[in-house]
Length: 182
Image (cartoon, rainbow, N blue to C red):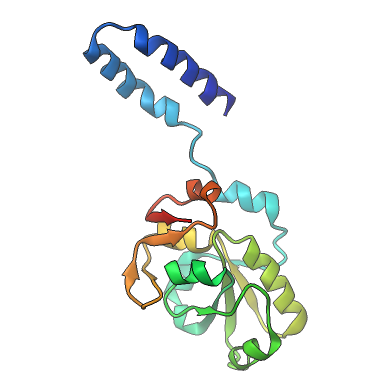
């Protein structure tokens, strides 16, 4: 980040001093990739920092290939789910409620929990592990990884959408595709 800020200051100081507009544009186009370097935030680093891997991960590719063999649980807030969610996922709220989940968990299928990137869903999966028997997986990278892999999302009316609720403005840098909503 320091490199980005320092380099940006140098360029903002130098560009106005150039007299030829074409040279300014050429310099900007040449330097833009360097200025952008370091701007992409990594979900991998985020998950390494905040998750303990107490709930094993499943990749978006594996979930997509065998989605009918899993119960997919969305652990985000209702407004996030309504903007978009993984097809056939079930919104159950942010805290596991035994009575609500009991009917789903009796289906004896493996459970996949997900959220925006996979942090809140790990916490949810830990709570499920204490309450219920069965295999529970956390979707690595959450709905962001699902969307970035090119897989479809549904909105509250079950229509295809490219909008993704990013939890907050700070998180939208982790989403590489789609339209960020917060």
